[in-house]
Length: 638
Image (cartoon, rainbow, N blue to C red; front, side, top):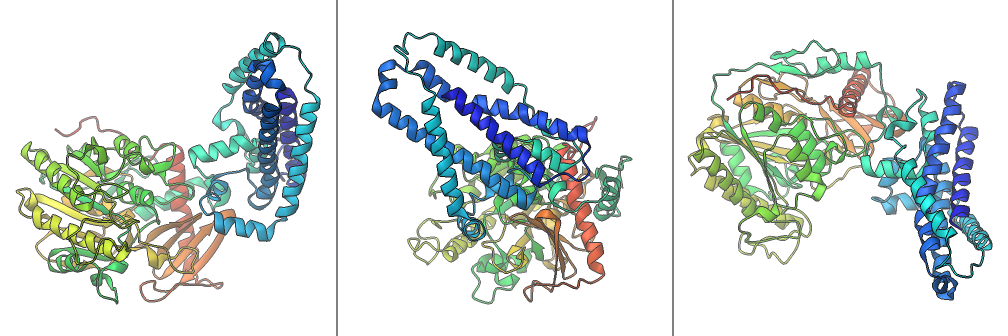
């Protein structure tokens, strides 16, 4: 039975591959590439077949004769085989439909179907003949199970039988040996992407998409010549104080500064789901949910009132705020597999002699937070289990008050040890189920609402600043409050930019004596360069953003992401790229109206489209080639 099933799966995989070759013939692929696609496919299908049916081989080789001949055992084995075959055949058949739409084997788009089940499955039900497909798949699965049992020979004593166990041994050795012959780029031998996709295997492509979350950017989004992309990107990220390296395929540059300036401390408070829609100072029409912070921002802060989040998830906020890195389609780089050495603000400050600490109110495993920050510049990582005292705990972690108390504790420790410090924190209170301690705000905490959670966030932040200004490090520390993303997504656009607007507020005597509003448009990519610019010391950079305070005359832009769409916004114009290299154009001021799609784009859209193409393409190139990092200085600061 195992050998028959493995052979059947191998044959089905080959049938799918030849069907794809026939239905979607690569136009410009040389014959040798097609031959290699078939050979690579045979290799991968054989490995998968051996590994996939190895557990069944174990059952046949090791189960006792009494159990093997038992009706209950055979019933369970038949049901399990039918369910397994139904899943496998359905995957193979569905991949044909998937390939028809995306010209690709299963990738992260397919994985995302699990994240948005209602929208996806309703669409599938309306577009494809699902009942017919299910009926056919059931018939095929039942036939395969029946044929499998037909090939099972009755053995007098399986427990004493040598051949099945010998067969299991040979099967295991072959599976292990062949498994080590598979390598990730085995299907990346041709310049024709379709050929590479056809060479792949269904289950390997699913596993690779699940593990790496790396969507093949050039295959689905607009590109230009590599040299042209880097040349254009360098111009777009250039500032008058930047000197690029000689390598034209790099964004590394030296930012001028005064090395004699003192190392100002920095505290960056990243806030969960704290969109501009809650702030009266940022245009909320209803009564403000952040009255205390509104007053502080207007009285003594530097308030940026035209900034956007780059995505709508916390890990998108991480990559944008910490790494000033564009939001590529697929997963955030925080969740990808090539992020063990990427540039961050913590790396830049660490090279300048700063002690760096990240404090997370939740568990470090969530969203890969701990792994990312520990690998990319933060020398100290504090998570929920490290909190010495927790006065109130939500389902996500410690409440904001406990988090900010720990921030002050870490700052005091570094100040007493005379270490310049960079302390980062990530809150979790403003998140469902919206729980918070009793007695902090007037509203009943048992009424779980977002509005109440936001009011508690306002209370906790105001409390933090009231305590911080009593500390001796207050005068030489820059404090920044930044939202990781907006609270919710709303709007009919492919990228609903209005819901991406977020607050960024800077506090402390080190920021300057006069409160002010900064109206220059920007996004989270600009946070790190702006903060480093306030310190005023020289540093090396790979960042895609620029200092909004030092260079307000530069064109402000926002790079955005939503689901599998990415875009750029500038001067009331937005260009959006979606799967299969689809391009859309939107116009309007998102602070005043809902941007609307236009089929007659202005001439300026062409420039904006090419700018977006260059920036996203270069970001993907740098990340995929592990080049988004600054080499350590030979003479690090003392």
